[in-house]
Amino acid sequence: MRKIVTIRQALSDPGFLGHALPGDSWFNWRTLLIGAIGEPLTEAERTVWRELTGRDAEPGVMVDTWLTVAGRRSGKSKAMATLCVFLSTLVDWSDELGVGERGLALIVSPSERQSANILRYALALIETSPLLAGLLENETQECLTLGRRVDIEVQSANWRRARGSTCVAICVDEAAFLHSADDSANSDRELLIALKPSLATTGGPLLITSSPSTMEGVTYEIHKRHAGPQGDHRILVVQASTKALNAKISDETINRAFADDPIAAEAEFGGQFRKLSTAFLPRAVVEAAVDKGIGGRCVSSGTRYEAHVDPAGGIGRDSLGLCIGHKLIDPSGRTIAIVDALLEIFPPFDTDESVARCSQILMHWGVYSITSDHYAADWVPGAFRRYGIEVTHNPISTSDIYANVIPLFTSKRVRLLDHQRSIDQLCKLRRKVGQAGREAVTHPANSHDDLAAAICGLLWKLSAPEGGCHGWDGFVTRELARMGVTPRRLDTDYDNVRVPLHPGEPDFGWSFPTTGGR
Image (cartoon, rainbow, N blue to C red; front, side):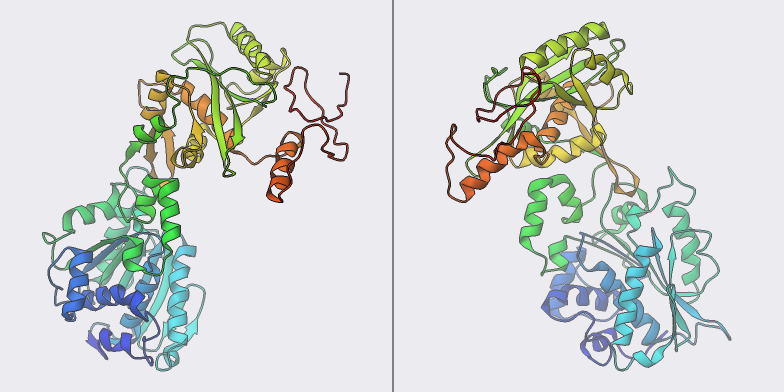
């Protein structure tokens, strides 16, 4: 290969790629590109190099493999597009390419849509460069044909399609989210085995970029073997947070993500690999939500209660769990979800008797409509309907409910009972990240989550936006308060709103006309 200009010159010249990574916010990326291509760094750049790679100095030659593990929105795709354009347009590969042979800068991602993002960056960089635009000979959705016998092409990640090309560079984007060898014949390992020989003729670099996923797969193996000073000097590993590579990202955005879900944010924005299994919530967060010494609360007149049941079949090891609670609006306007009562029926038990017992408790709390998971299909709704209790199946799984209530705990909008068994169940839940980053929350083997499922099912229900007639009085009260109007309980006119109430339902305290045979 013969550089027509150095990458340092290209990145500083508006006629070439000076518009690609401009300004101070892209300084770190420019440093990485210059060092990875084998060019010397300045002392200021070398300081950045040490921070991002853990190595004292640049390699002095173009790297064979460059792995970048960085947080979301850190500029990985644009930086790789810039390097692919440089290698395709400002490097002469004639000595490495045979007669009639064309080189290829290949972009591979888990999906062609992801690859197309880098191709769009590359096209924009070429079209807006006064000295490079004339090299573009043809453009399709999958390929840019360039005048220096090199094309830039995108593919989805398939090891069968990856063979037969002579590549000057290969960019594998979001590599941590490719299939692992455990669950797919089209694995990340097989893909890289198929790709690497394509670079043998030209000696071009293999560029691997990704947001971090779990501690498994080829991405993690390369990181583990070559990160830091002990790694091969021709294999560069960069690990960085979003902020380290994109100074323009909003601190508020990142701080909010860490406040909502610290474990997920550590990977998405912190650039850290996830453990295969982590705690659902730290014990300190769960215990901070406990009202010490309160094992149960009393029924309060004028309060609307909700409930969630985690049913069981009465045999085996699973208990039936029932959780009753309510929500209130604190002085700052936040919704607080409060657990008032817990019931656990241990196996073995008679299912009809357990439903009757639950129904009696629900009616005592004035609850005639509850939610449940999809256990036993229509049996649960039918069993409770005999006692006048309507059961609605949740539209999402219990695992998804667990994930959705995490922000309630981290934002301190949950009040739990001082019930040690339920606290232990919440603390023992584990978050497991599978392939493609999909997360599941479940209990460990030989453990239980019956009360935890009932609690989180209730919390998810209480945190849902208010709707229907039952949310109307709260909505009106808060809107009037926002406008500076304080309603009085007996003479507030709500335009003769009619609220159908179930028998035994607590009264809100407003003078609403009712309908039906009451």
